[in-house]
Length: 212
Image 1: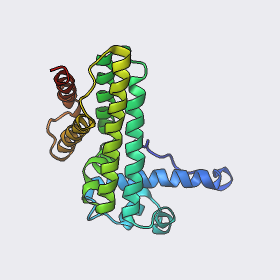
Image 2: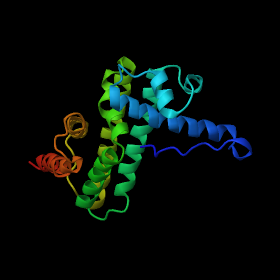
Image 3: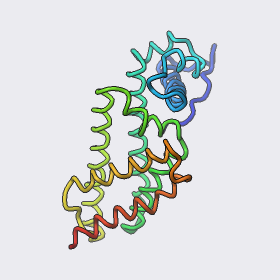
Image 4: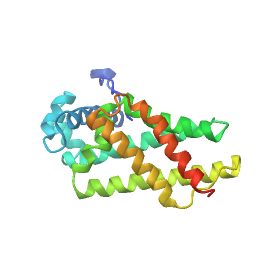
């Protein structure tokens, strides 16, 4: 998920236009995540996001047509960074158990490190309209496809069982997302990392079922 954006230098030290626009967008993403997490998507506004970012509404509208476009762009950026973090976490693992452990840990650590972005990604996006739900469905499918590819790789490299169907992978994603969403909304369990063994047991159970 996006790191906090640094202040943008001004005057003769100002960066080129394309860099300034990237930094502005990063600040707006950070502000939007904070506003969406604090008041919810329905009550959020371009004015509130601009104020949170310390920018004018005109600057907001240079980047986004409205708050829907803002949350969609934020959702795309955050979900891609989570996918990248999970993928990178498994690259050096030398056992299937460690690959699972590190992938699950990377997912949950992202939620802990960026709770506002996580709430936007897993909770507020649901109330942002049909386009947002289509985007969410696509991203969940992308995560499921990642699991299918990882499972195929692990089967070839380590001899682990293959999942019986792509729906098994989607079930893992759906369960993990709902567990994380409940934690963000209700604080159950108190520490998101307590979900780590739960998700690992889900994965182990599905893999064991393929051998029956």
